[in-house]
Length: 217
Image 1 (cartoon, helix red, strand yellow):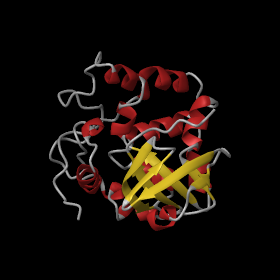
Image 2 (cartoon, helix red, strand yellow):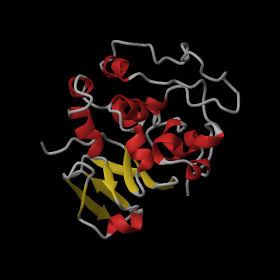
Image 3 (cartoon, rainbow, N blue to C red):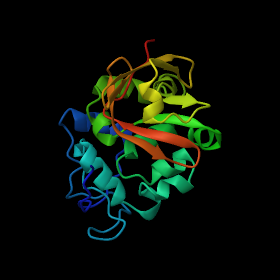
């Protein structure tokens, strides 16, 4: 159902501090003409999409992940715990940076079972810059609360599991609404839709989503 295609261009490893400016159109630093330092050369086996903030549809997301480094492919992610697996996924670079800023890498990797609703770089690019700046300014408070709203602890819930639920309890104790309409699953009271479901890592089931969800508080 999902088509494969060759991943494009040079890897762009987004810095969260620059993303807010990029969202407002004031910063061209994520251009394909300015690859990140240390990024693989274009055309190499490890080359990632030139601008993953522009990859938003399911076909493009899967193709980008399959075109990344071996550890970042859909199959390769099964060997690593979730934070490590995400760090080599070319469409989750902003999420990985946020998790690192919040100091949650070890917590997520050590958890025995998780369900993670992972906003893609495209989802972060659509986030209001003021909200992003506020989260960055409070990495152990607001940022941790926002990230925790995307994680369910103690369960690895598949898309089939989610289709039978109306809500789940998140890592921070907040209630996350879940709704299914045919094959479409939305979370966060319609804040995000699952665009690529059921990516397995060593300790988590990951669902790529198209929005960054904000907790009720």
